[in-house]
Length: 591
Ligand code: PEP
Ligand code: MG
Image (cartoon, rainbow, N blue to C red; front, side):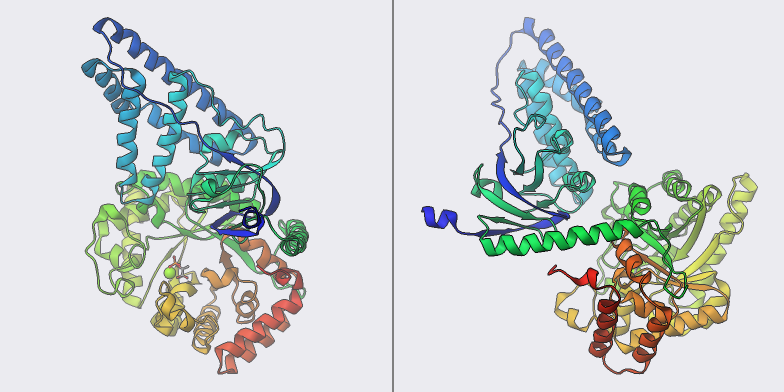
């Protein structure tokens, strides 16, 4: 049906790398290996094992080459992706299993390798842990490459020799394929599967190529040569776009490009208002791989290091040494800027499968964060020691999540003191002056902020939780999302109470929840007296942009209005009005 084929069709997926591109589609289907079982004579077995081992050496060389190239062009974080491939390739259990199968069952190497590798893939896909499930793709990538070598077929997926610019569409793009692509000719890419954290997504962002993943069956529904537009901001691929769509996207692309230029210009400048108020702008991170992002986006250190990812993405508890290495890397890479490490905040919606915690009826009101840590002193002790030790290598600060009252703070501090004594006895260095703070994310803590303030060096307001606990609206439940209002007068007042108590006691107060990264709400926080804002690295520049165009006096007038206003909607409308007046460029697009 030619008419239908020419009509505009929209595929929706997950936006993983920002940008817009349009052009011809090139569908990539990885050539399927035809693996047949061949029986071998005893005399052929040694040679077959040799053939297998040679293919492994060849594969290893190719991966090292790709890794070297990626290290040069993209950096260490991206090159690290190939460590997983190398580890699998060197996994003696896997290699021995294949050799045993060749010898015991007297079969060809490709059949044995394919069978064993598929078993690994199935086991990884069935894992409870997202990190392990993602390793299944690494295993597939590696298997395909090793089979190419065993069967002496050329990699049909070799993207080094593309003839014209195109949008690559595929079921999945493996990291090693992605690493080889010729950036000149790849406008963007779209895949059926994948998520925000898949390695392909990480590579796309590093390469600065717009990408959409999770498009389900796009690689089967489209044909090479189709004309399409890919929107890496909203996660859509539009095939046969109409003139109207092309026009709208042309406008959007111009706006986004000019905004990106403006943000780049101020990225490494300080966040100071027009009337001279300095705001410390830092970043929220989840592991040591985020260091580069903190630096390139112009954040002045880390305001929230969420350490639970060290615990969630692993098969067992991280040791003190493993934690120390991770914290140390971040602290020394970013010094002299501060890195605020938050102690473990497991529970709520964050669980580590290996801990096998019993299900609770109300996990957000249950055994979470500091409550869990105080009940597991050995686990907590390992983390406190690791953080203290890391403090010797940079400007480390530490904070406790979910403090609800003084007793918890005192208990945590007592344990910390014990760790200090231990380290002194063991002769291990740490910063005796390391600042310790409390997160304010439960209304009770905000209301007794004046009691907590003399015992800490700073407050960091966790607005994500503070909003859900104050308004009794589960932050993960879309049915009550209309009640989850950051500009509710109760929230405004609790922030004000916290900041005032901090300042009266000579300590500073920051905000590290999502509101800190929202350019509409940041001026309100500044007007309420907040000293530090910590947000995802990718939004830091936007916040900086608005801070540098704002007057503290305007922000204070907004805060005064909010403190006497009864309506969340009106407060939000005022915030929007000030933000749009202050930084119109940030709001000039439909996304
Ligand atoms: C918060 O609650 O605002 C916060 C920053 O912590 P998390 O989102 O990790 O609970
Ligand atoms: Mg929180």
